[in-house]
Structures are given as C-alpha cells and as structure tokens.
Amino acid sequence: GDMENNEIDLAKNIRMRRVELGLEQKTVAEAAGLWPNQLSNIENGKQRIRAEWLPKIAAALACTVAQLYGEKPMSFGEYINVGSDDFVVLISPGALERYAQDAIHSTPTIREMQRRKLDEHVSEPCEVLTP
Image (tube, rainbow, N blue to C red; front, side, top):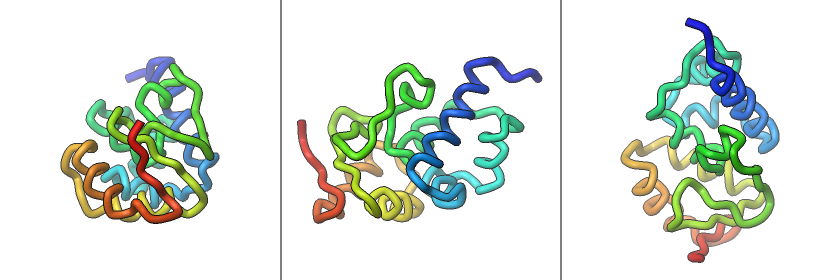
C-alpha cells in the first residue's frame, strides 16, 4: 500500500538521526532488535514500520518516539530523555555506541532494558542522572 506522509517523515527522521549520531545501520538495527536489511528498508520507505518497533528504534537512537515523528526537537550532546521519565542520559562520544551494543542482548520492555543496561554504565562516559 501507499505510505502515509507521516510514515515517510518518520523514515526520513530515523535515517537523519542515525546519521547525525554517526551510527551504522547494523549497530542501530541490532540495538532495536531488527535485521540490518529491515532497518535499511524502513529508512528507504520500502518497509512499513510496526508500532512495536518504534520504542526500540527510539531507544537505540537515544531519543523519544515523539522526536522521531518530529513532534519535538532532537537534542544531542546535552541531557537527553531516552523514552522514559525515569532516566535522563548524558550522551557523549562512544557512550551511545556502547549502549547500543549492550542493548542487543535483551529484548524485555524498553524500561527494563534501560534500567538494567544503564545501571551498569553509571561510569563515564555515560552518566545516569535522576531528574
């Protein structure tokens, strides 16, 4: 079927955010529990995005689903809220890639994933801060 306008924007925003963060498709796909070719097809508008993928894609890109839809501006290199009010994460170079790598090994809820994975990395360069 035809892609809706907001789906096309969503696909573009996913790609833009990934490129902005300097992450490879493979890294983001693995962190989000997708195959790299699925993410490639999503970014190119060849594959519809299933609702249940969105929180995982957003978390892999250190942003919220609303930000992926373009409803709120993206932030980078400052305090970033990663999909949940419980965590504000300070992203610095290398931290996001490591977070994405670690996220590969779990697909419980995104909240549990953040709690478990981010707790392991309170050391630099990724701090977990409570608001």
